[in-house]
Length: 162
Image (cartoon, rainbow, N blue to C red; front, side):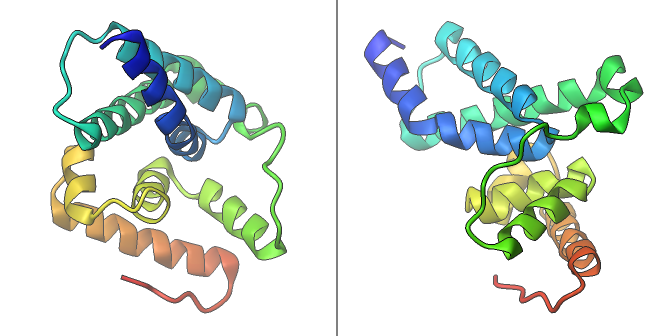
């Protein structure tokens, strides 16, 4: 990958990588680290990409894997909860968006990541399954359980749009 292609990839996919990492890790600082690590891996990758969609899927896969490694680290398992919560939250236009953001962050990582990939990144269930190394039925089950948990947390009627 030459410098021009790399710069284009960073400009195009930096926000996507940050969003996925932020929702997976729950910390803006950790999400920034993830963005740097993912694009460092892209820069050093010797593999040619077949197109934009292949590059996008590769970046998502590397992001998810890096976030999983961070979540499995011994420090992460022993750190107090307040050290893992975001120091500063993004600004929202409506209070409902703030409540939804908090509710999504309160979910376990296995549910957060499928919600982010399905709703924010608009990936089909089949592609999420391939990306996470799961069966399609496992992804649909996680989506269903995540929606149910969000209903409980938010305490309002949740419309499933599929």
